[in-house]
Amino acid sequence: MHNQLTESDIKKMQEEIEYRKLVVRREALEDVKAARAQGDLSENFEYYAAKKFKNKNEGRIRFLERMIRTAEVISDESAEDEVGVNNKVDVFFEEDDETETYKIVTTMRQNSLENLISTESPLGKALMGHKVGDRVYVEIGNGNGYYVTIKAIDKSEGDEEALRSF
Image: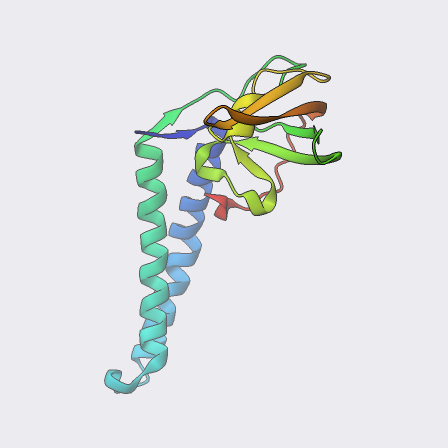
């Protein structure tokens, strides 16, 4: 199975890779050199911390490059009045009499704590392609589910999530 990413996801990942290679990598190497210059490495905590940070940065670069290389690129375009990828949606939950706002994202960016829900989640899958005012059944398995109503769709490009959301 490939990771689903949009062109904008890939662009953000490439920007993070470039930043990590040009800025963070240089800082990490300088930290390792400075710690090594302090002498005895067997009891040098700064050296081990600097090496750990350097290795973590390199691991993140490899992870992002692998994600891009193996990605299945999906479109984030949808009709002006329909829910699509990277849209914020106000959803009214009938059973709870509450409205919540979610952003529909690719599976690699999902984070329920920040109301970023995947296109593959039951709610995300049910909302895709629907319009404001639609009453949508969200199936959660074994014939169980619940109804929600779409109150608003925000298609603005404002993407305040940090790059680390991958």
